[in-house]
Length: 320
Image 1: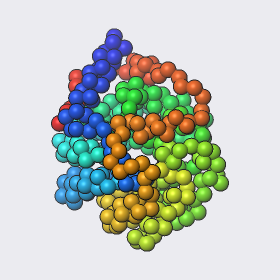
Image 2 (image 1 turned 120 degrees about the vertical axis):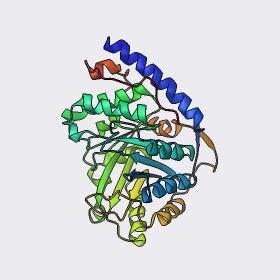
Image 3 (image 1 turned 45 degrees about the horizontal axis):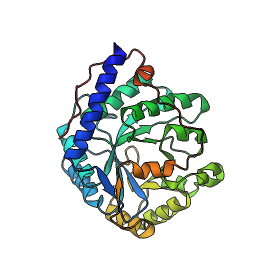
């Protein structure tokens, strides 16, 4: 009964996803003038200054590649928020991508709760994939993250999965559980001593698109440019640098945001011709051709991952 129900829901969600993509006119992306992506934790509510920040992301998505992390309530929340629906669709229409924030508590969170949040994101918002936060880095937890990855891909094979262990000590084998790994998240001071290729030399064996750095507490535009140069040295294909501080460094865009956009354009010119159209998903899969871990394995059906998970689900995904 659960298997039949989930198969029916998955089919409807995938159909609705295709319709949504057509409605917002985002069936393809154009290569920007930069080969480095801005991975923005957009942890600001789309009202007032927060709405202005979301609109700024949409405007800049025509200049650089932008991936925004959506986090309505430490997760998707219990209901769709029309204001988030509007800014998500606006950013995607402009060429940006949006990823739903999901906490895993370093592998200690019940996987059924994680999967429920993933389903809610897909049903509530027009996301491109998931940002899996608080990712563990031990061999015993890897299967937990592989199951999450396989579930996301079973929902839509074009969904991208970004995992955030926040450090370079993650095992190389974790690359089978994420398309991109955030191998640094921390302060500007700690970033100055960050040498991932010394700690984890295997990083150099993969495309830059597989790795990301997020740096906070970077106080000035001058410091931002220095950190951006460092990101290039760490084999990072995506980055976010902000002057925000703990406890929430991501409550707004950095004060030097426009200069960061310009610096990325200037520092990382694309090797691809400007305006060359690439189907959605191809940007991610192009790098995946170089992945060295073993042969691809069949995806685990959603029913296997969820066990006897039985929860009310909406019949279709929103298309506004």
